Length: 298
Image (cartoon, rainbow, N blue to C red; front, side, top):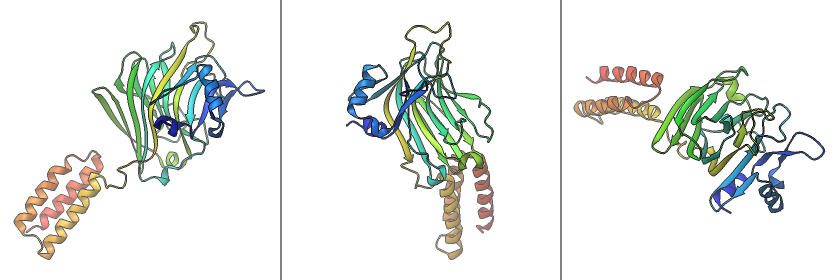
């Protein structure tokens, strides 16, 4: 199996097909996604499989989950995850928007709450732009969409990732030579809730409008989907590293392990590197600590 298949076929798949004996959307459990089922979904035009990709396709009209009138073909984790279990949670999608519904609005990457219908993070293609909506509050009200990058008309390549470390969320989006980074602070209430990652296409237009063209759909080609500990999560961030270096510098100076002139050179180097710390509060704290260390280098 190729990497996209290895990853995705461990997940459940919600489709615009009806559940047997019901009118709501059918979700196939990962154990049900055997070759005969996949072949049938392919024949129905809901998925396509390639050597290094997996396409998910959602017609604008079809069966929906009970709470909405919007269709989706979306993989999701079979069990919730808890953000506290990760030093730094990384959710990353590398893909290509192949088609978008006539309204030009589709969700491709979600971090949903398992105990409610108010996702913490939604990544959108919205009429030529990649945007993100973040509920960095406890309420269920809709979040504002924040623009990340222009990608233009489909087909459009994109890379989108969410990183959560402590209460800090970093959203990074890339398209060709364009890239954008946005930071948010999540509430303790949000962080404590069980979450379910989703990837695929979730149309953001209600089905059945008179203006809906025949055969309207959205389609996403998935090259890579990763959810787990960030590969560099065990490494301290820059602010933590510089804080440790300041402590060590003062300890070495007091013990006589480093001369005053050399200590001043090291301190100047640390002061320069502090400028690269992105978090304003951490940067301020380091500058205060640097001044305190400087005062003791006599």
